[in-house]
Image 1 (cartoon, rainbow, N blue to C red):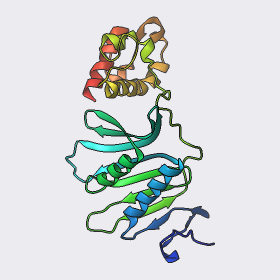
Image 2 (cartoon, one colour; image 1 turned 90 degrees about the vertical axis):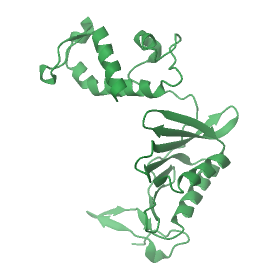
Image 3 (tube, rainbow, N blue to C red; image 1 turned 180 degrees about the horizontal axis):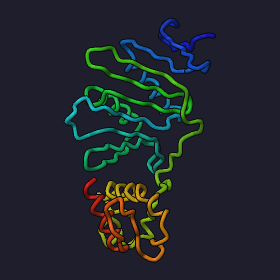
Image 4 (cartoon, rainbow, N blue to C red; image 1 turned 180 degrees about the vertical axis):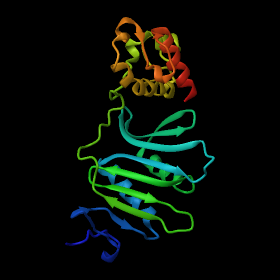
Length: 241
């Protein structure tokens, strides 16, 4: 069995692990230039169109409001861009940057703001760990995606709640009269959808919702709720998330 060779690294540093007679194809590399090699893999994926997404996580400062960053390629009228979603405690901020700007921003974020980066392409996955007082570590693995990423900026998102068919969202100020999520309310809309997703198994076990009443189990310490009451509950819960 031949260990996977990682360019620029001695073959002895590549590791091929067998567990339960199955091959684990993750090659772990611990070298001083691990971060630069990860950035080179990212730049190559951006150039050849194989980038699916990348995530930056584990803020180096525990008190930082920015918790993680998700980057995906998108196709806009102005051209191909890298779409950044900056996820803070209370809000998400989206920015679309050119490839050059995006690569520079990612490298900057890895200089003290985030200690972990995961790259996903159609050819492989690459995990970078930046540990205080230790050498950076790069782990290469098999791809989790085998097809080219969807880059349409307006791709449909699967949601349990259709904003265009939910008048109550407009009455609560989450959507416009046309059924579009208002600017600044995107995170709230996701929170409401998440809450409904959690409640869905309970709702599926009762027929009462078809009559305009949602009944939750008594063990939950609740009583039957009208539709208006359930909406208020969802909104209150979303505000508390």
